[in-house]
Amino acid sequence: MISGGAYTRRVSAIEFADVAHRFALARGGSYVAVDGVSFTVAPGEFVAIVGPTGAGKSTLLNLAAGLLRSTAGTVSSFGRRVDGINRRAAYLFQQDVLLPWKTALDNVVLGPLLHRRPRAEADALARRWLARVGLAGFENRYPHQLSGGMRKRVALAQSLIVGPEILLMDEPFSALDVQTRALMENDLLRIWQDDRKTVLFVTHDLEEAIALADRVLVLSAGPGARIIGTHPVPLPRPRDVTEVRLEPAFQDIYRAVWRQLRGEVLRAYAASGAGVLGQVASGGTASAP
Amino acid sequence: MSRVRLLPYQIGVLAVALAAWQATTQRRWVDPFFFSQPSAIARRIGEWFATGFIYRHLGTTALETVLAFLTGAALGVVFGFWFARSPLLSGVFDPYLKMANALPRVVLAPIFTLWFGLGVLSKVAFGVTLVFFIVFFNTYQGIREVDADLLNNARMLGASERDLLRHVLLPSALVWILSSLHTSVGLALVGAVVGEYLGAGRGLGYVIAQSEGTFDTTGVFAGMTVLAAFTLVIDLIVTGIEQRLLAWKPEAAGRA
Image 1 (tube, rainbow over the protein chains, first blue to last red):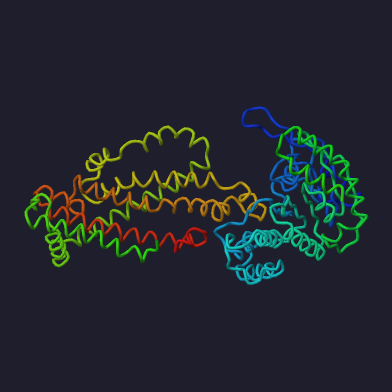
Image 2: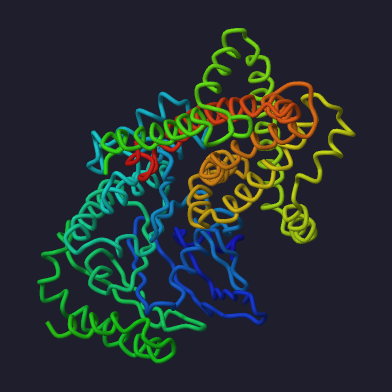
């Protein structure tokens, strides 16, 4: 896979080849989160993975990041097998992961400092990035003094400042209110448009996936989740996430993906009880616009 | 109610208590031999400071407190960190640590006097046994409770294991250690004074013990008063340090 023949075609930013991941459970035994997952993400491509809660979406991202090691199959990045932290990727987590004892500036400057950049240079770079995500003037605020949306912006600057080629995003905007979320999504698209990084974006929100991505992959319900469908999104760019939703082409893609996803969501719901009730409800109403 | 509005009442309570004490002992309703007298105590404290008698003892107690706190805290941080990062170590030593922590440490004081003599060292050793466990358990907890995503995020940004220690693990443990700072500094002082009380040549505990030995109740109460004032000063210093170091915390900022 890595040697010889890999170079005959264009090298993928991320490639999953028949990947499985099995977790050991604390009570003994194991749980197969994902099984037989194969897909590729081309350099500069924005790919979204949708799937029901608990399907193993975060597991896929952790495998791509090198935070987890696959128990079968290979994960590679730009033709190299991922072994240990994937140094070409940045990760935007679902939870708040800013260090609460550091100011916005000190949080953003962390990456360059860890890469042994001189302090003054790193500081200047961090200020530029904070300005780029719209937070000039908030350099000396601590995370608890910022709103949820602002914290996400700081986190975005913190991830992007190290100049990653791949951005892994795990439902990064799920905790935000609807308006803030749309703003953040548009900002993300604007920043992405500037330097076209490879993005692997995981979400359970189908609308978000279609509005943002070039391609939407559908993950089946766990255990042993696998990719059951891939849907290109040929909507023109630059997009506005709130307006693109109103286009007929968007609705068509939505219906096609939802038809596939629906059964998986119901399956996950039946397996885990009330946990995904909200998701079925929101998916159900939105599917009949 | 605000602190300023409470202050007159707080002073009032003290004034009434002191006045009642003074009056009852003055009229011999209560024997001042057993209960002393506020005026006599004030005079004694004045004498101590005027003659400079008390400074030597205050200095000794302060030195013992600071040394006991620093040593206990340093050992607690090192061992807490070490145990938190090694499940085997913490698993093996868990029952012994629980045992040592449950033991009333006062019983160690005579042994320490035997080992380290009547001087400063035996009090420091005693204080260390009190401070160590507080800091140890808080460091241990602080490092174990660090959010896995916080660590993963730092790793993704390029942090080595050493960087994680400096930027994530230690600051996180520091929050826990600082939250117990009042308790651990207080215990360092308790260690010093109890140690002196049980056998020493100088220190506030020694002054109180000496006065007791000669049925000098005025001396006992004067010693207690100086000790209480000393505790208050230390507590104020600790609060100041805490607010500086925890400026990023929402509660600390609000409390100031």
